[in-house]
Image (tube, rainbow, N blue to C red):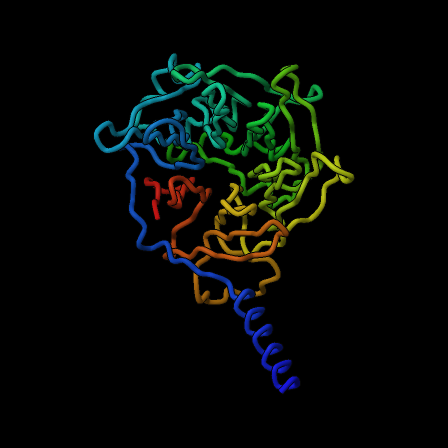
Length: 349
């Protein structure tokens, strides 16, 4: 009986391990669509503050607020050019042709003690607006004397007010105007894919000190740093690197403080990173990885996000219909909120 009990106990253990190793898959095709206002797209990043308040930056350079169905969408924040230049509010002109002038807010995060919203604008730099909204002020446009080229993701330490953010490249902006084509009179745009195509590794991880108002470079010369999130215990940051399909960890505290290490290899090109509710992180995927593929292979499923546990192991994945891309997966009030830099709605699951 003792031997039989041991065998049964071993089988039960293996069954538990196998179950634990199974990856949970959630299909997002049934998510509710929270439509953006007419003429704008690209809710790249999301944050939540106040009653029913959902905040996101969109393609025309503004940060919008959703106040619930009774209120709808309203303008919460904007940059100086948006308020001064008529072309920025001209919906007849494609955003891709004017975003280098009118701005493109990407990461957005609140410092909840003050209600201030920090904004990572790809062109204007690190910005901040008060709890009442309005015109955002530029806090920083350079670090170590080197101007920002592509400010992207950010995280706010709610204990200190310090802001951690990425400058994805020192060589390439998100989009830049090239020569005007004589044949059709439209601008061609060079976009952020040039960073990957050229294997650019000039990106930086930065810190804005809320007390001194100074920006310091934490890590330099990295390939396409994108989204960044602070761990639940405040000991480290997790940074997504889009080109190499990786997430890295930067230690803020403890014996490894100041070191940068691989946290996870990812099955796709990551964008933003957000904490989950269990000490891990949600990583949005713009598309599946095409590294080391000699020819296109039909995909059994279209991955748009993965959840990593505190050790960097994949424990959950999100799938979607072909053509859907995500830039952020965030949790609020027990729901998953899905942002996309390309779509004209926010998904709610």
